[in-house]
Amino acid sequence: MGWMFDNVERLIARLQKPANHCETLTSDDATTALRDTLQPGDVLLVEGKGRISSSIKYITQSTWSHSALYVGPIAGATTRGEPHVLIEANIDEGVVSAPLSKYLPCQTRICRPVGLSEADREVVCRYAFERIGLRYDFKNIIDLMRYLFPCPLPQRWRRQTIALGSGDASRIICSSLIAQAFEAVRYPVLPKITYIENQSALREVAAIRHSSLYAPRDFDLSPYFMVVKPTLARNFNYKDMQWADLLQVQAEQAAPAPEIERAIAAAA
Image (cartoon, rainbow, N blue to C red):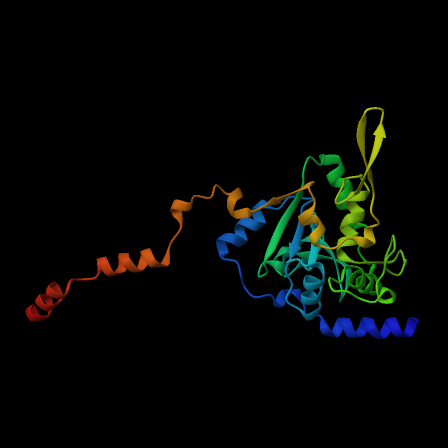
């Protein structure tokens, strides 16, 4: 079976286009706002444009195909002088650090863990940093696709289990890496909630879901992560918006009237 998964890995790697091929969606001001808003411990969700990214978005019924953890500048890690501030697991390289500019052209979303202490924030970031060098778990992404596929499939093609992937501790996918980092401090993402009757009341008890079951969308869906929009975080004022139709009216009003134009022409 190993040879088959090796062939699948090579096929997936060929199909996946680098995430920096995203269409440019952000202005210079929005780019600055994103840089200024991100904090260590934030999860950056990315809408990738590659073929595999499109498949992940369809299967998970979500805009987001990739996730990265913002940890702040990493000493000694730069690309053309720009510090690496993200840790991610990607198909081409496994777990690596990356500069923020890699995803500036892409549609992104910031998901921030609410109430996470500074000490636990450091643990989360350090956990991800210590996993740099791990390989990408292609079997996990294949299993996750089978597990989440929205259309009816024969039972033999679906994966109904408490864990997905190869089971190899040296392999991981992007969402699993981040889920494990938060699990290290017992910060919830989307835990399984059960109710236990305690005398006259019901008590909620959370159980940790296996990290291999997480997809990028889960950080967006989580009730414990706050969506932070950089534009709003910078004292957005709708009165400052430049509207195309109003600019056209202003331009027409500023233009010389026909009579004035004729007078100017006659005088010349």
